[in-house]
Length: 102
Image (cartoon, rainbow, N blue to C red; front, side):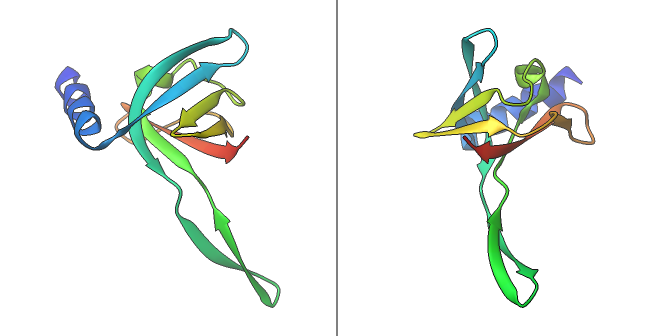
């Protein structure tokens, strides 16, 4: 399984972005690599369509396993808060962080 994590890290180094993860309660931060997505979609609310986004960040689970809701992730010049528990993907080696604008 170490090979799988190494493969994920290689992919993130080639295609990912660097982000600064801050543990708000401890005041510490670290740099993590991941894939950031902030796609939007239109949803119907009654007779009106509303555009919504759900920014998320995929990365190696062990890099963010200590993070909790409301810790922050700085991507580029935008700071996001983690909006809930960190989710593992089916392999158990990748994490999915659901974010909200801070």
